Image (cartoon, rainbow over all chains, first blue to last red; front, side, top):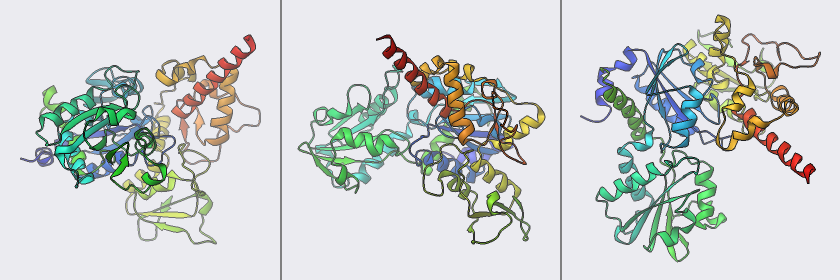
Length: 275
Length: 186
């Protein structure tokens, strides 16, 4: 049975008039930052398996404090559209939304705090698909995969999800010579990518849900990409004596929508609710 | 907003009603509302969705009232829900000092802003640019010329709590106040 089939046949969340709330970061500078979250919400809305599907953001509207006013349902599944369990998922979202545990009853609604998309095992497959798409001419035996996360000194756990993905990629049997991790704000820094990876070719996979400023500006700067050349998105690049491929963020296709729905199912399964 | 002749619904900017003069951009998907709200007429990104700079020149034709409500929600997020909560007497108003005191990380210092600083940022961010009616106490100090409602609205756009934009303004202002005080001490 394919992931998603069980939920769509039972239709129980729609029957219970439950809502899905996707929580993203958003941006005050990049208007495209929230697009993947909105696109995913629309994809899932069209499946008709929830009575309502909404979005809320840290840096855009509706923000986390106002989101509840836009939801009619009395039961809401909250799925963070984040790749990691870090500062935002463990501190900011619970604080702003007044979520005190796996299930919180507050302001006339029942809120279920689901795991973020980034910890789902299917992401490993998505990353490998992205690597094959972006570097079809890269021979795996001479190529490193470099997974780039944000990392932050505000949370000791901010690197856990990236590290876990690196581990899963290594265990997946994918034929790449190396799989490494790097970060924007903590060690190992992505700016040292050429020293972190021994291979002559490196495929950089940003571990972000959206192509925001980190993917469009910060990562290319830190990799040492020529600003004019990289604007043309011409992979591969020749940088520091290596062949470099830079992929986009994880994205918002149906596979990611399946992951979101699966996080809701997993919540119910681990909390013993009937479906 | 109003009923269309074919039984559907129409939504447009108040400047474009009743229709006259220049033809309007005809749109028919609910998701078009998000694009309408995202940029100003001159292409600048609109982070503040209740800003006074919503572009005109469009008409959104939708088949159902559910689509209409969603479209309004995309242009003014959570506005209908907040308005209905207000009608029920069910709005949770949170004072600015309370909002600032719970901030962490890069916004932690926002709590240090002075009362004078608060007045400045509320004037500069809220009163100058936002259509929402402020319910929280620190935003209610006003001059004798301020209207009770910022504009004549059928559905009042409500601000029950300071938004992240104002929190960011407070953090910046608090930092400037601290740096200004340090320079004086030197």
